[in-house]
Image (tube, helix red, strand yellow):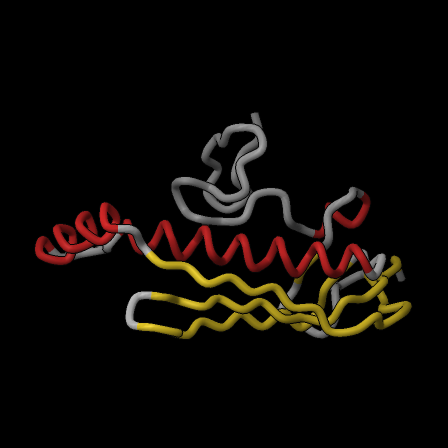
Length: 142
């Protein structure tokens, strides 16, 4: 089984994010040699140079909690502390937006996305929009 690079927790095969700390599983500089796309918030990736800029890619998702989730969140908010029902839903939405952005980058044959920008906004009273936008590029070792 793989381990979370951030907190060291053992995670099940195929899981997209750590159930303990929420870190994305399987994304990092080592991915450049694999089939995954490296995503960074910076304009550069240390040890690599941008060979070609392919364009802007975006992934969007709108999420809301169902009745059960709202009920659980209501109880958690009365007790105080983290509202895990919402935290879990936001993390799922973040991963989904990143996955959609990576799909668009793969369609352009990119191996990396630089200048990632994540944004959240409320569309309706209980609907949250998560947006992931970056620049799809082809990078190579320096």
